[in-house]
Image 1: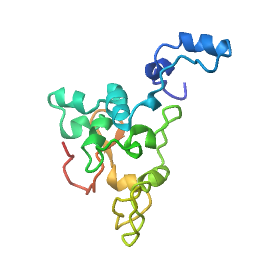
Image 2 (image 1 turned 30 degrees about the vertical axis):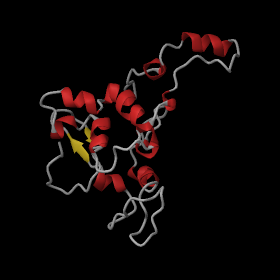
Image 3 (image 1 turned 90 degrees about the vertical axis):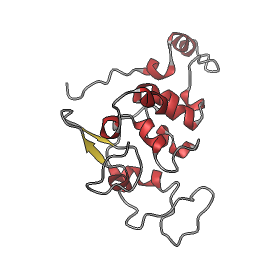
Image 4 (image 1 turned 90 degrees about the horizontal axis):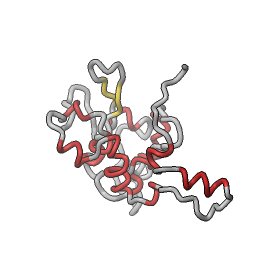
Length: 176
């Protein structure tokens, strides 16, 4: 086996699929009988829906001893705690950067346009209602390498992207 199978199928997100399959086979495309998480608000999608498996804010608050590096794997919780990132803005939701129907993209450059959907490119740029976050004074490339660093967890043999967006300086403690 070349890749591990995560074991997450369609029904994990869309609910029972029997009625969906029956409607599709009968070519009743107006009644596909399936839950669409895309109909949720950005906040509900990220915290309640994606947070069900990836641990959202409310679940993380109930887990003892899960502060700092111990909650790196709780992406919705980490994102919610990021400065300016707890608004119900679709640009800040999980699916703004990740397509759950495709393999996770690990190339840092892929995420740059996602960051620049909110941030202006240069400090002198005029901010707009859509792009009203400050420019990074260092770069407009590979934003996630500085602002969402990879963290290696002891004993896990893997690194995780820290979704607590910030200026992450080497040696700084991992935020709670």
